Amino acid sequence: MAKASATMARLTKRVWENKLLTEKTKTRLYQACVLSTLLYGSETWTTLMRHERRLNTFHMRCLKRLLEIKWQDRIPYNDILERAGIPSMYALLAQRRRRWLGHMRRMEDGRLPKDVLYGQLATGTRPVGRPALRYKDACKQDLKACCITVETWETLAEDRTAWRQSLHRVIKAAEKSRSGHATQKRSLRKARTAIPPTASPFVCVLCNKDCQARIGLLSHSRRCPKK
Image 1 (cartoon, rainbow, N blue to C red):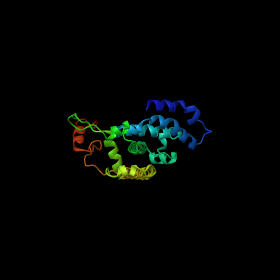
Image 2: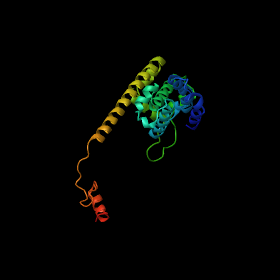
Image 3: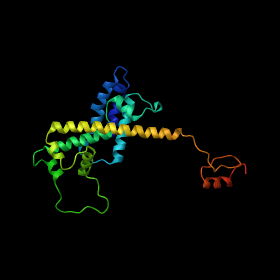
Image 4: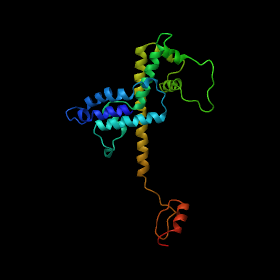
């Protein structure tokens, strides 16, 4: 992430602040220079949710910068991604991991990546507690999100074209679902803030301060300035 941030900074005056370049050109340069640096080797990453959130935060910050969007504009992330024509970081990571998984399946026997994927340790024990997330576990989660069973993915991955087409359809559907879910959450949040607050029974009779709870009213009554 530090190298991607440095690449983003080096292109500030030449690209991001250049008024002669269109947003489409800036977006393509961002994909070619910044995203390729940020996601180098991401096909083999085993990421947790906190890692993906951090990467997505950096991704959105860069997009807002090249699109000249300020936080005061209060534009939702879905609108920013649609304007840039780039999926979210969650979709990018899953797409690269699934693509590499299909590539390993089509490898010849004896190749080291394929042997590691299908290999099992003959001896040894795992530590007590929740097992650490493995690459196989991350791939199983990706396949489950694509509605692809563990028993049938190998047959589907044998055909490179069909595998990539299915991934493209699934990623597009997942992005649409994620966008709809985020829009629904935002609508519910706005609806909650629009509801007028109800009258609270815990109001100080001396200064009319609403303490919201009984313990708050008792604490306030000891130090009320009008007491």
